[in-house]
Structures are given as structure tokens and as C-alpha cells.
Amino acid sequence: LLRLEELVRQFLISKESLSIRMLDHSNDPTPLLKEIRDDKISTIIIDANASVSYLILKKAADLGMTSAYYKYILTTMVSLA
Image (cartoon, rainbow, N blue to C red):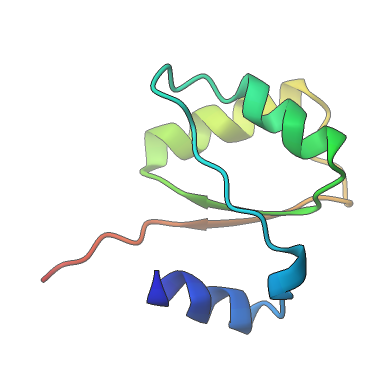
């Protein structure tokens, strides 16, 4: 969580406009992406492995969420300790 807060500060995302969402157990990003789109959220941080990130970005493209309006930050915040 501290690493996420540091990332948020680096990208100058205000805490007031920050909303944290998680995929459900089905790992289908469609409902979550539609919710993000409908809420007009433009900066999206994806904390996932490469295959899940690819799936999310592919679905985002299908939903028209790859225009200049959207900013994606991809990370894997796995602790090595």
C-alpha cells in the first residue's frame, strides 16, 4: 500500500480523485472497465502480472478506452522480501 501511495504521488494523482477497484474472482475485466468508463475515470493503475494486464488492456481497447483521454500505469507491486 505504501508503494501505491508513492506511485500516486509521483504521478500527481489527487487522493480525492483516487478510486481503488479490484477484479472479481471471474477475472473478467469487462464490468469493472465499464464502471470506470461510466464514472469518467481517466487515470488507471493496473497492478497485475503481464498476462492479466494484457487481458485488461485488450478488453479496454474493445470498449474504446484507449484514446488520449485514458492514461494507464502498469505495475507489479510484488514484494521480494
